[in-house]
Length: 112
Image (cartoon, rainbow, N blue to C red):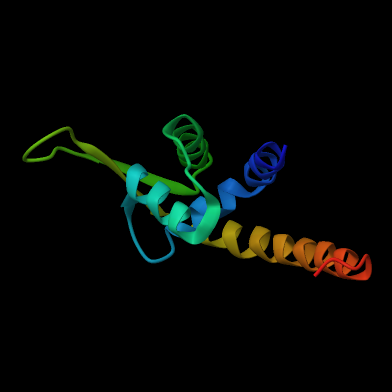
C-alpha cells in the first residue's frame, strides 16, 4: 500500500523533478533516472520517465538532441529551455507552498 501511495505522489510531481534535474546542464534519460533515484525517489523506470520527457519536450520546456555514440546506441540529450526554467520557478514555488501546508497539517496532527 505504501508503494502505491508513493507512486501516486511521485506522479504528481515528476515533471517538476525532471525539470529540476536539468538545471545544472544537459543529461539523458538513464542519467536523469539515476539522479532521481540517488535523491531518494526510488527507481524511475523508462516507461514512466520517457513519456514525461516527451511531454516536456512537446510543451517546449526541454529541448532534445539525438547524438550517435562511438560504441553502443545513440542517446537523446535533454536541456532545460528558458520556458522550462520559468515553469520550474513558478510551479516549484507553488509545490513548495503546498508542501509547507501539508507539513503544517501533519505536524498539527502529531506527525513529525
